[in-house]
Length: 318
Image (cartoon, rainbow, N blue to C red):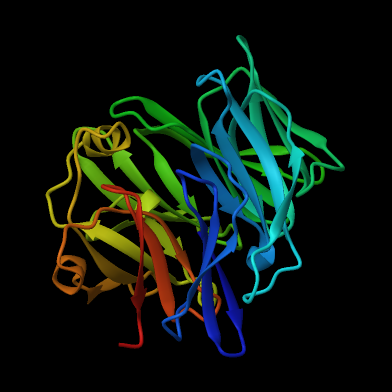
């Protein structure tokens, strides 16, 4: 899903997995509209770019094995008529992909190594900035100058986090040998919220400037968090009510467990936290949050329920 703030309020756009049709919901009215009926069956993922007028889609090709990647743009965007999509194919063999504004970073891998490229949203101006024998990586595009690469988390296995300069390709090692490492980096790349999975699960904040580590509570996955766009000391997270242990994240990734989440606000400056929303009470069902994002004005937290892939929002003003 992607959000777009206009004068009237916030709009959420999303792509339906089964059909590839694109819909738009006005958060300030009952209006819900299909804005493109171009059929793209079995969409695996959709990542929106700046302005929510373009997105990168990944879907199964006809062989039901290969994942194809396309950059799509809505043409003649209007809320009154359905629009057509224009698509540009990205290279094959992409293992993961993230976006920042109008730029894309993607990883390709073969039998022996992985390469990382930055490009424009249409695939032009492709540039190699990463090459390594480390293949299992989670990328994060934090700002126009910095891509973060973290080794995929597994309990008890040392994890590493690297900063890669999008202009020069210079790599800096930031976190090393942290068991079961999973992380979320702040937009200015100054702070890292991370989960350690050794003998137990623990959450920490690492400050780049002071090189200090501060334990944070309650414990949750960085995958359930999103950094404030207005205040770098604030993070919003979905926090499971269930007790997390050293294999909870792995079990969650592969679908062995689901959680019942509430929404919390973390003030990292004071190392305090407070609950903002009881999701099961307000929704009437179990919600296991994944892929959270904030609207530009931070009125809405938009997220997907991992249990059934439904799209939800929480209005912070109510």
